[in-house]
Image (cartoon, rainbow, N blue to C red; front, side):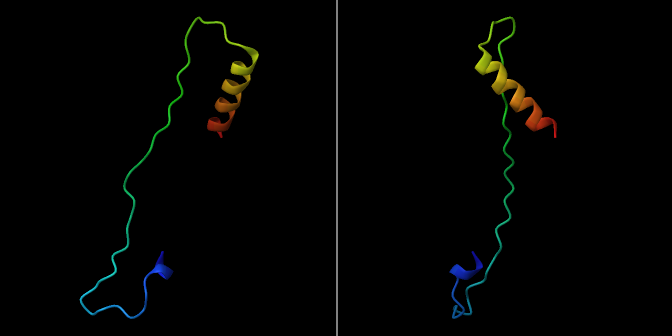
Length: 53
């Protein structure tokens, strides 16, 4: 981003760094007491393993 601003800026222009303050949360929901397909089970296990790390 720094490269997108030219060096010949007017003296009235000030560079202000942008600091992201938005946190995103991702949630997975699974139905209880429902039979899941083998693919669904595999996906669920992969998700659990990746977020346990």
